[in-house]
Image (cartoon, rainbow, N blue to C red):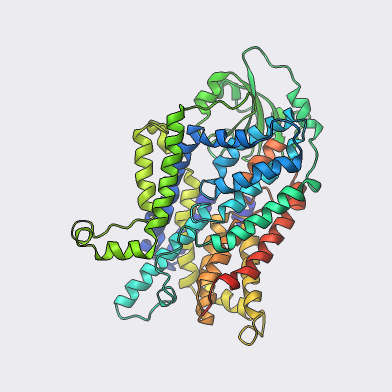
Length: 539
């Protein structure tokens, strides 16, 4: 599975599903365990949040906020970063990362050119700012929701086993039966985010490249009347993957002319029409206004519109109503996790009589928010299935079966024993726990840089539980470590979708991510290992 993911032989969801089928055929997991992820609350919550993100995105409220934050004159890379990156990080703590980058990347690129600044000084930091914002809350990234769902599933299985006379599981022993709360990760995540912002604002500019001439060559081409120029990152559903532009008639399919291909940060020189297209390619196209209307909401492309200033797509009332719904969803889920609220739900006679199954969690409020947005036409209800990233959802669902197989087969305990054996001073020294956290972080982080963040979480989660079980300590610190490590994909463009998007928009090379991303990886690694023991009890 790992080899297939690294070689990108199929989409991640299909690769994980293949592994699940093989594990099922081998008798390692049961049919029930193979499909339990498809009904998991965490996975379904991710799907609901895709629709919430679409409703907020179409409202235009995010563009409005950031547009007013950008300097209008006398801007420098540092002053712009001071005003822009913190608000992006904050937004990403409560909003899916990918739409944030899709919305802001072209806006920042156009603004930078007007200010006579190099766009390449801003786009990689934009991606990194969304990533470090996402690690701060439960809903900031799908990885956190995957781990949350796995915790709920494991706690449920432990409770079932205990009810049938089995031994008390490690999650129930330490009272971790409700998964992660909305701001559980904020204790350490906010500090990591602040340190990351300092690096991005004051130091990253020295490692980032200047605007490359290849971009300007494409931009200076004359446009036909009525046409505008766009950059489109090819999505997983693009039917021309593996074909050349000679074999796949782009104009016949989409009514637009492909003018160039950007691959690996560079404009392809020479006969680009005979280059086989991959999902990492960005096309420079000329199209009329109908192209954006027809394909702007499609998963065939990650649409990057480079032309024109921001124009809000909705009226003022609907924009603010979308923001209000998002805020109420977050507040509702946060308040619903408070212990007094849980006690009230458990003791109130009316609730127990008429709504005994009521639970005020993120799933509950996300459901309500989606329904309100659908009926108030905040996203196109007739096309709502297009807004799901199905491959991500399938990857997440299969991750539960992979995790179960690692636990049942004893593989997780074997690796956990190896991690613990890395040091002989674990039980006799205060430094042993740091070594174990460092090893767990590095294993997870290598996985997430080479494959996908959700698949990395699936592999590392059972390791975290097995390490805690072997040591007889609280598993929560190890689970938090996995959350941070699985989301810290800074050193490669393939580790995170947002990195891939800004690579296409900014024309970055692979080495640019290595130069700027390795210090970010080091910051998150050191702060995670050093701070987790200070904020979480192991006993």
